[in-house]
Image 1 (cartoon, rainbow, N blue to C red):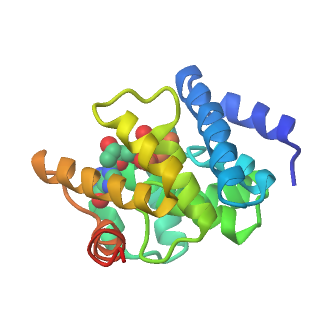
Image 2: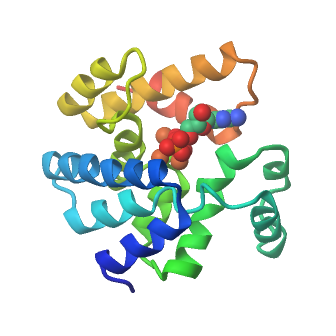
Length: 188
Ligand code: DGI
Ligand code: FE
Ligand code: FE
Ligand code: FE
């Protein structure tokens, strides 16, 4: 496994400057949420840093892995927005040597969420959404809710992302619907 400094160098060369700065902000927000929710700070740091490692990879890299690992064919109907987490976690495992399953699941689920999410998975999902560089309408409310209750933050993001996808006629990945049914519908 690589040290934080080595990971930083790998990320710097894999990502554009603005994406690299985003992952540093996600790391900081993930650490803040980990402190509030009694989660291991080092796991939060590594997961935050690595969550978008695959974001700048060409489509062919993902398609090769989908075939090599016999992943669900429905993935082929989506693109980088879904692949960089759902498939990209394998690149983090294979190329960065990260083996912790909680970190790998947090990377895998950071875009869509999932029916079952550990505290660390919820933290990375939320840190990506509310990191201090985000400035969409509603981000202040999302931060307030998340600092009060991590699971309420998950519900807020899930509902707003689904509304956005529907308003844009975008395809909804099935796991995004599972997340909605668990965290928004069944949230008590
Ligand atoms: O990688 P980031 O930009 O930091 O953030 P992200 O990995 O959370 O990606 C967010 C994008 O992914 C956002 O534009 C919405 C999109 N997205 C989330 N769920 C789905 C989705 N896109 C499709 N097509 N289907 C989904 O279910
Ligand atoms: Fe992402
Ligand atoms: Fe996200
Ligand atoms: Fe991100």
